Each structure stands twice: as structure tokens, then as C-alpha cells.
Picture (cartoon, rainbow, N blue to C red):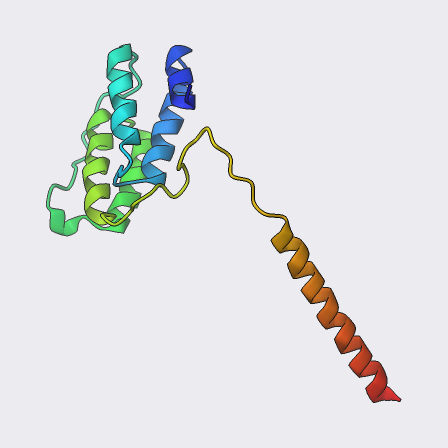
Length: 143
């Protein structure tokens, strides 16, 4: 069971909102349909997580849809988590980030991919070796 499904089952509105925000930040174009599926699950659950839309105008001219506008929408979403704004962000995200083939942050929220420790150890060994060589050169140069 995903974290989103768990949040819906426990009626955790705060977690649902946080996950929806993370999904749209990590994959604004929703190329893997995570957001679409989450919104469908949310509709079927009858849980209300969205606020009433405020009076702030949404820009409908696609020529004005930029990364900066998307960021502005993210900020506005914090103040007014409305369904209209969220769905508008999906449209803007698909327009601004069309080449996003996979999520930046959430490829699969239930799978943790460990980072190799070997790289850190190798880097440390290389740096230590270089310092040792430098020290030997300096000591031989002083004699």
C-alpha cells in the first residue's frame, strides 16, 4: 500500500496535501500518472482536502506559462490549496516541463534505492593518496 493510499485510509488530510504537493513538485507534467491516480483515489474516498478557490486570477495565456509562473503557483498553493489551482498547475507543468520522463523525487515512494558507499570510500582513498604523494614530494624537495 502506498503512502497516499494509507493517508486516505486514515483520513490524514495533512499528509494527503503534503503528498499532492510533493508529487506536483517532483513531476510537474505527471508523466507517470501518479497525480491523476491520486486525484481519482481522492474523489472516490469523498475526503475534502481542497480549499475554496480564492479570488486570485489564474493566467490562461499559455505564452505566459514559464518556470517562474509555475513556482508562483506553488507559493500560491500554500496559501490557497484549491482544486482549481492544483489542476491549473498540472496544465502549466505539462506545458513548461514536457520532457520530464520521470519524477525528480518520487520514482516509487515505497522503494528506497541505497546509494553506493563504495564511491565515497574510493574518493577518500584517492584524496588520501594524493595528499601522501604531495607530502612525499614536499619532504624530498626540502632535503
